[in-house]
Amino acid sequence: MPLLFCMALLLGSPAFAAGDAAAGKKLVGTCAACHGQDGNSPSPANPKLAGQGEAYLLKQLRDIKSGAREVALMVGQLDNKTDQQLADMAAYYASQTQTAGVAKAELVALGTEIYRNGNHERGIAACTGCHGPAGLGNEPAKYPMIAGQHADYIA
Image 1 (tube, one colour):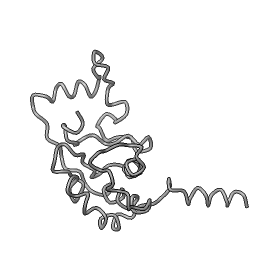
Image 2 (cartoon, rainbow, N blue to C red):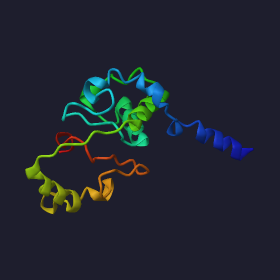
Image 3 (cartoon, rainbow, N blue to C red):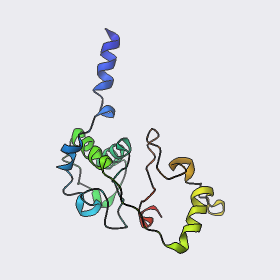
Image 4 (cartoon, rainbow, N blue to C red):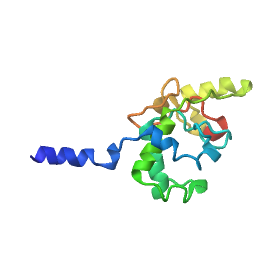
């Protein structure tokens, strides 16, 4: 009996909230202004959300709502959203396909060098350690995919 009780507590925990992408699509109307309807932001200043890991997105939404992560443009945007709605929004954006990023040809070699090896003089760690060799992120550790992300947002 104690095992069943513990399982019920764990499964009912917000950390395990399962998102519904179809429901999430109906909730992202306001988000589209900055992040695009499908999560591919038209502005290089705003992150692409399409294709990001669902757990990562949900954590960010929760942190922004609680104030643990400060994003000035998002203050108040999530105040009326329930945890289930946040999970639905995360599921929707995670289910979308990210569009390819565009890089300035003259910066590709430098970017590749920093990505793979970091910049020791400036105290910048190699990106591959957290985001993987192809920039696809690490979902279990909640590190985001940065491949295809806007360069202006990353830098």
